[in-house]
Image 1: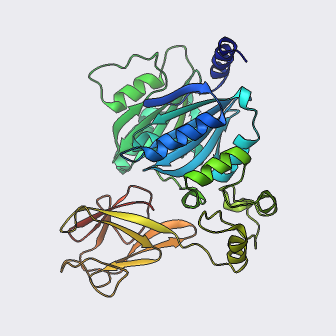
Image 2 (image 1 turned 135 degrees about the horizontal axis):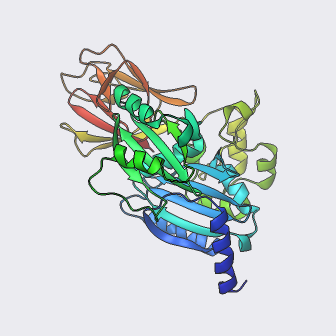
Image 3 (image 1 turned 45 degrees about the vertical axis):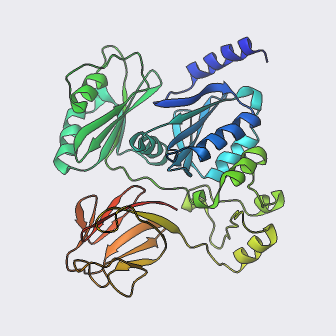
Amino acid sequence: MELTNYAAACYTQNMNNYQFPRQKVLCDEKPFSRKLLHSLLKTVYAASPPFTGYLEIANDEPSLLFLFFFNGAPYAAGRYGDCKPISYSIQKFGEQLARSAEESMSVTLCETDPVLLKSMVLFLQEEPAVKAPTSLIDIECIVRQIGEVGADAMIALCRDKKINFFFFKDGKGALAHYSDLSYERPEGMTVDEEMLLYAFQPKDKVQAFIFRDMVTTMAEDSTLLDKDSLDKLFSVGYPKNRRRRDAEISPMPDGNPKNRRRGDTEISPISAMGGVEVLVKALRQEPKLPSFVLSVESGPLQGERFTVTLPCVIGRKDCDLILDDQRISRRHAELKMLDNKLIIEDLASKNGTKVNGETISKKRLVANDLISIGPINLRISPA
């Protein structure tokens, strides 16, 4: 296809597709090729500071495929088509990409802040608490309720296939991310006021999606894929060191636990092992223990980074992670997986445990949450 014809096709394709906010665009809707994709992966993994953002693949169905990166590692994947968001495993993203016709696709790479990344992942993963045209709901009342609860929340507003995100921190409007670049943002307004103004566009239908929390889930296969594995996955539909027949017999989970049959064995693409060794380990049901990075942001150990394997007990003495301070209990808190969710539980400590400033007894964690144990603040991220 000639470049001029391709540009025209891309324009028609973009008119049919929904648009999501962009920040720092590193590659803008270029004709798809495996060579370009390989180059973009090199850009992601070489970035300093570590890359946070998304890879977007547009095709002529029309639909959009997304692969999200957080702190230099793959985090989640998703698809938006037929006005429906679909959460994907990264394996499924790769399979879809490998069987798509290259000539019908374009590729975009955007670097984003963590809030926009989380908003997009949330939009593709979770069912909103409310989904309706703004003309049919009392969005002002909803904003007041978010403020009264004082929690993090997100409202997405869609007009003319342009999806815009409004992030609420502790119940107050904090950030707005627009894909609707034709909208002239008013000066001197709070984010809450700006969002309400956008919600009631004269003569235009605006669809609202209300998310009353900001809880997102890292794809189960995200920690099992490095750059080489992704490269192979995107080329042939299965990761490095994993044979096509293995992939056909035992597919990776699609991210929905309801779709996994009882007794299914997951064969994990671990780049350091040959296919036979991986198969043996899987048949023996030796699961790969999840691990996370704890970065110390305050206290005597500021600047240190710990990689911990779960379950992990944190405390002053005889623990998996020892923090030597008298304000920290001997066995203070525990990090563990519960129903495929990362949980922190306070172990009846004297001075308590906090997450993002809130004292907790047990709480689900997501990437970038701040854990406070005594005088020490620990930021959690995928290993």
